[in-house]
Image (cartoon, rainbow, N blue to C red):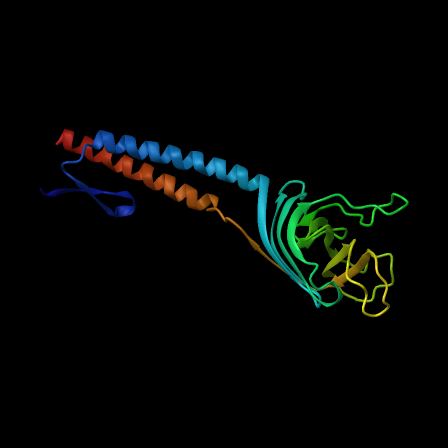
Length: 230
């Protein structure tokens, strides 16, 4: 059976089989457009609320990999997963990351860490105070962004850099002093690589898909009216 050739948008030809039920086809296109619009709104809303990032932090003594989610409005880090690989004196005390936690306290009930659990997407790093998570067996890790302008200590490094500090309540015996007991690493600078997870189509892409379906529906309607008048 010959195909009807109908003039499409922008002067392009659209081939429609003569045997097709145009009413049903147009309805399908409308449903598909509505579904695309609903998906666009749902995904856009979700994407605007929570963002997931993969990360890779590397320093002389630590390799930390995983992913975290944060609120795109408040920049609060909600969760983090992954692994910590430790070398040097802390070798063997790495392990799986268990999530965001509150800071442990010392004998005076003072926290070992002061954190705000923030991520700055514009700067591409965690905040100055950073995030605190547990890993391995009872260990604590703090990913942060070192800024000499905000530090209360004499800055040993002139430039802002990603950093990591750790608290190991039950570390191995120190090889330098022979001391045992909790080990606190005040901070080690390194590099931080980030990549977005689950990227979704941008609004122009959604719009092109929807208008494409609607355009085909309009061509079918127009072609049927032209045949009825001829």
